[in-house]
Image 1 (cartoon, each protein chain N blue to C red):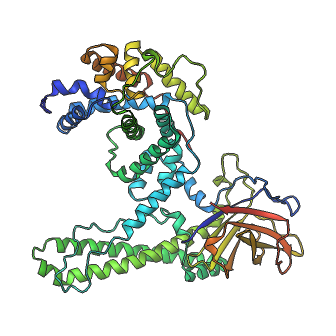
Image 2 (cartoon, chains in turn yellow, brown):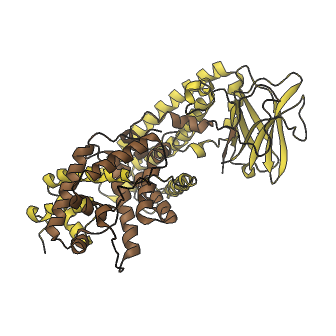
Image 3 (tube, rainbow over the protein chains, first blue to last red):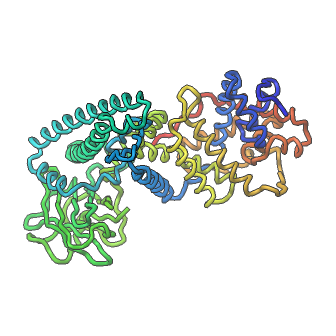
Length: 323
Length: 229
């Protein structure tokens, strides 16, 4: 049996380690040795760099188109399952529960981190959004102020949680811990902070969406994409009875006509609200739906006579499907 | 559950010009969530990894777009199995997501770390499949078929250039060093197995691996650059 500390015996295996060419036993020996040998760690970095170059020596084959979505779905599942973990602080404090003082202050994902989920907004927020568009200038400033206020508030509360958690950590006795005012304060603060954080995320989402001027900036388009092409996003509320359609880059509808949005369910075209666009070709359309908006499989925008239609014309200006 | 639909539209000059018939493919445009992704183009691999530590999923998607083809290609070359290579690629990027915090910026490039994970995971799969079986090596002198003009990368000029550069560096290695590197890295043979197959002392195989890798590193140095989105 080779001593893992025997540098002379282990170091010749570093190249094999970097090429994954060791049997399990030798690999374990090398790993034990690496934990205490800075020289071998440095040499291994060089060898690993040499080995990594080999990945470029094979002809490229593109992975299937759906693989990225599968990976993201797996990550979503992980995120969701971790969010569903039970809270470790018991509000009743009757059975000498011990607050989880090992919990670091919550690491908050950036608001855009969960983009696909973030499109869903509360009904109140959706209504507020429409109002914001109507009075974009003033509301935009109010929105920015509100985001700043909430950000400061969340930061302050996070700091308080850190301080309380630190003081809890210095207590030795569970009973004392459970009955402490600090433990209850941490709980209240965590709840309050989570609520504020949710509001903040919604407001940041709105702030982002309402910065449509930058959205239509041609610098966002590259790779041969047409900067003038109209585009849009349909956002459905999790309740399924409400959706928001945002369009950009549409020329004004011809005189005597309007645009109209259609959602496709099981082969049927369900008419949405007729709308017009502003001078920038931008519009947000609030859709109140009788069906389940989360079940749609397609969406399109057509040109229709004033007042809208019950069946779509074939003048389609935007078309898309659930991705 | 909420969902997002991106709309694709062509340039609109009026209702007739914009008419899109069923089955007609409209040019792709960026939906709003794609715009957020564009802001990440300028970030380095390491900066994206730092974002992933903060649970930023878009950052992972950007790294996926930069490197998934390389990871998939490597696995596919070694396993010759589309389904298994997809699984490996998925595992690799899930590992990046879960282990981003373990990457140490002062300890080598991101690509070294990433391809290390990818290769290790592929080797695991390869050995699982070949455990207990006698594997033949038909041509140890040219495991990658380096002289062949038939093998060409399928994608862009950058890949072509990297591909050609690395293969040229490999061809410049002494045959004996190249053989042990190719047999281990692409063939999944252990150094002990290689010693038996080549009828060489184990120490000789180890030395050839070490020298060959160091020469490769020196020869390629900064010639390979990170792909762009």
